[in-house]
Image (cartoon, rainbow, N blue to C red; front, side):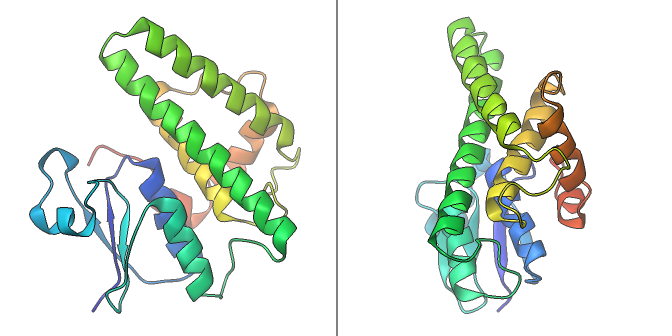
Length: 200
């Protein structure tokens, strides 16, 4: 059977995994679903009803973006995206958590604005600003990957920033030149170009 990844075209979490599969050279069929009318077959794969879900070519089914990335690193050793040794792996996991937290914040901000909830909007915006400042301080001035070599942590941050720009514009850039340079550098990778968020 063909390897399948279930996604929506806007989910930063699905995009993180999609980019990881491309970076690792793993041929994958992308299955785009509508979360508003989830097909029963998808609900059987993901009882919590979220993307991404990976169904590997032997039928192994893995939900959750970080769990999928760890699975891919454990099973497919070519083109590693996790680093070598516990210190490098810890750094990647911490970066991945920052990226996922930024994505969560950007999603929450979208819903707060949609619902005209000023209090929730202010809370989400403040959390996003803290994360952006943390990432800018950690970014290399030359746009190199955060942990020295490309990792799924970088992909998490790239996907989160892509979603932030897609939903809320590029207002995060002023005063964060290091992070903007890092983003612009990695956003030109073929995996990033192929997976940019879009409506359809």
